[in-house]
Length: 135
Image (cartoon, rainbow, N blue to C red; front, side, top):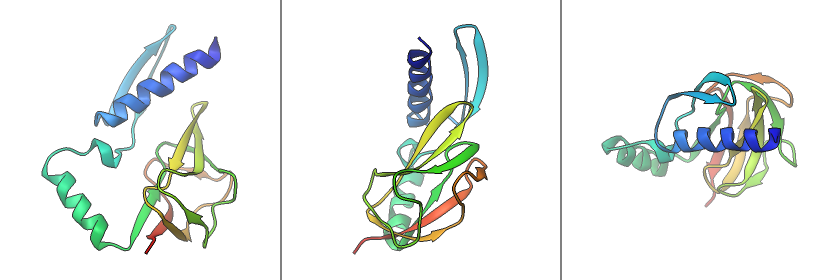
């Protein structure tokens, strides 16, 4: 039953993030908590979204940031400079509040900078790595 509860919470947080919410209050099975959410590219609205797309195209790198406060765990291979990644590929996991939060590559490219190491505590929005756009 606990697995199902965690999946429901993960789904609720993912949905809230996709709708652009910065903070969410959840009550589930008698447990209440607040969560501050990372803003994803998909959750930007209006003209700022168009500006951010133009900026992404102009820049040759994109930042990979922590979606929540927690501890970093590399996914599969270690998070290392020179690693080639595909858009949407999970490159790390940040574990916080008993939940694993995937950190996916926003673009096809190569990791050119790593700012954290395995099992390091990270803060919301902290720069984890930079990915250079594949040419």
